[in-house]
Image 1 (cartoon, rainbow, N blue to C red):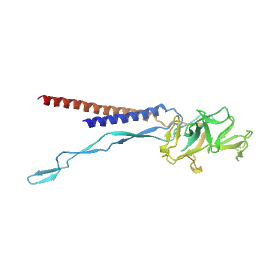
Image 2: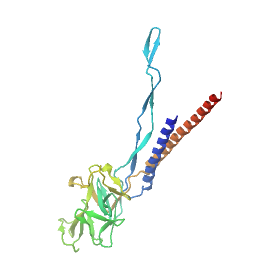
Image 3: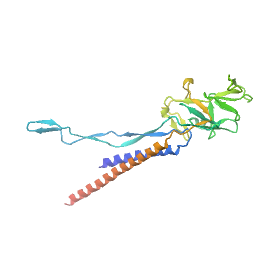
Image 4: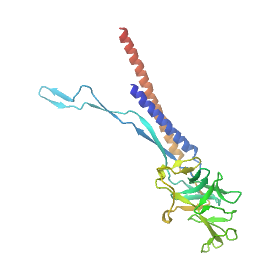
Length: 283
């Protein structure tokens, strides 16, 4: 009976962790670039239950036959293992704001924070007072050659992530791009769009930032053939489906109640056994 209490308690603890994950997903359903998390649980080893003093042999006058003494398996509980991020593409919306960017495909924008480089799918950028492209928290967006200083709202970004500015802008090292589409623009830099050998093991680091871990490997600039499309004037919304998360929340609540009932039943059974034991002792 005591074992059943511990089993039920472990189930309640796991469902609480799962509920926190679902609640966090729902809280960020409208957060640009947010990626939903999924909880993973791990069961403790099961025990094989068999009848005591029973070899499984049934004998009768004319012979015998075997009857397995195994009753079945007994679960010993469960534990919370991890929460991992699901990096499926979120829906893309058109904003017609030149400072909004979305990635169509796999990869991350790179920003420089006080803690070092961080990676995000949230392309809701703006321009700082000194003319740099920054995120909503004032962290500078990185290009492949450093920070991107556009000066003012006179720039364009193509689907490769290359940043072009008006030809009468002041900086020196420009490379003009051929073609009529960008005839009056000059190349400034290209957005630093990266990926990781094991994206699944990235760690969340507040807001919609991610940082590399010892298991994710180091960030690398995505090669030309695998580079995602950069869409200027668009934003990627959260990939959280509120209907799915609400359904999951109901399931978790029911699992919590079921484990709670296991503990309650075990407690009542123990109380009755104690009463019987005291009664026999008095006799």
